[in-house]
Image 1 (tube, rainbow, N blue to C red):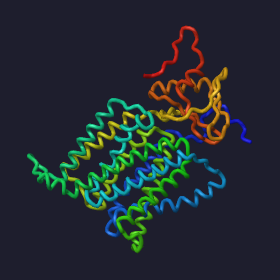
Image 2 (cartoon, helix red, strand yellow):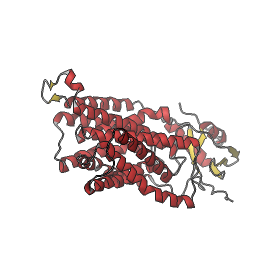
Image 3 (tube, rainbow, N blue to C red):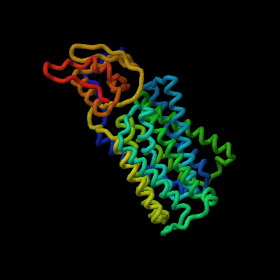
Image 4 (tube, rainbow, N blue to C red):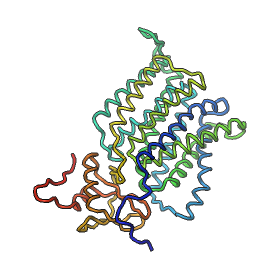
Length: 412
């Protein structure tokens, strides 16, 4: 029988903000090599096949670890969580299928920067999907990002100089580089959906089962797509298989798995903001290893997009240094009961009792007031499941202010 947890709801193993962002720095460094490894792989195999191998190898490496861990710590999945994981894997397959294909049509700089606009879509879609408020300055970042996209698109069909010498409208539609830009942008939208679903699910399911199932779904989807286009899935040389393995280990297992771990401990927009380092690293590596340097007009568009990503995603950041974090979003509230010195919450997963002290209630209300959130996540120290408590429940359990003090108000 499970004994009641300790009075504090903050799990001892919760990482600090410094550890989260140090891990993200390693992930960005690993992900920056993805464009280079893909370019080296494309003479050997079609883009969809490269994507299929990348996800398949990653999933195959994770399954033995998951099965071993599952015997010791069985995970409970609900039908809704499995369904969302399938959607997440499908979006991941769409992301890699479109983005890797874009590198066969446009430059590393254009592809890497356009796919890195995912933070703008994350911040824009956060209010709809997970309830995170959009600050007004986000729209400035979106405007800069859009302007940068137009500049990059024009660099693919116009010669530098003033006035610019551009091809005819009919030739624009046939531009191979423009097709690559659109594929990279589609990859950014798919990545935004993947990050947002991960943000929602990572508070309810453990990391290892989540990424294993997500990568498996993505791999199956990409293998199916490659088969539908009658692309060969076998017969590639050892050099190609080695590059596929490097893609699976570094950009996939290290980088993307770290992103999934980080969204459990930080808001979606700050995690997405760290993706800003990927295109910068990719552009530098492409110049060094591929001798591919962006032209002046393309570099101007790259700069506008990077500034837009920084400006827009930064507006959504919140401090993650506290041991107790507020997370906006919807969810079924756990059962609660009020106590003289706080409130008790029954964990939705393991039914253990979590005690929330009055100081923690006051802290939660203050955090929700700052962020505009409607729910606060209380971590069960027994099973580490995050139980979402509504703002109304916290306000009802809040200690009454002394005479002459103001009451805690709900933020607008």
